[in-house]
Image 1 (cartoon, rainbow, N blue to C red):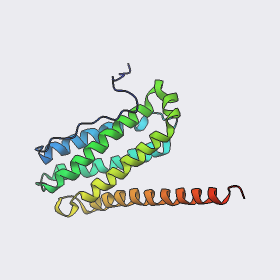
Image 2: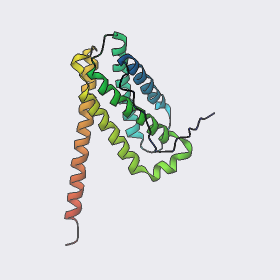
Image 3: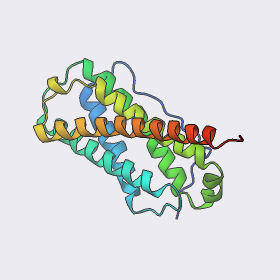
Image 4: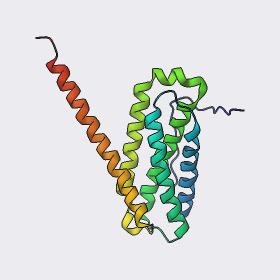
Length: 181
């Protein structure tokens, strides 16, 4: 039996964690949301398959990081709460977006709004990159390999953004040159 939510398709509401949330509670919430995203790995996505699977893969790395930090049980600095809260908001929106893309009755709707869906994914990946930049990795007790993977995710999101903007500039430049003479 499929559960259909009352939320409108491509409406990405989210409520951020309160300002006084404890970092361990926030970590548990991040693990839960990232687990829900990873559970969509086996779903079929008729469109946006590549970016969805790439996003799920990156969220899997983030989940490993969250679990590593939670297992170590050391106190997180207060400055980490801001970055973790931003990650929670972005991951919750990604969860809603992936759920919409996997929804059976919404395939045509998603296809008709393909540009918007692509833009939302790019925006959310960029917001994860910004949240990871804000996160004080030096003050967080995690395995060195995990920290390197987190830095890699942030850097790859930034490089994707730069390569897309270069492609957009080149395509707009080529269309100007190919215009009427």
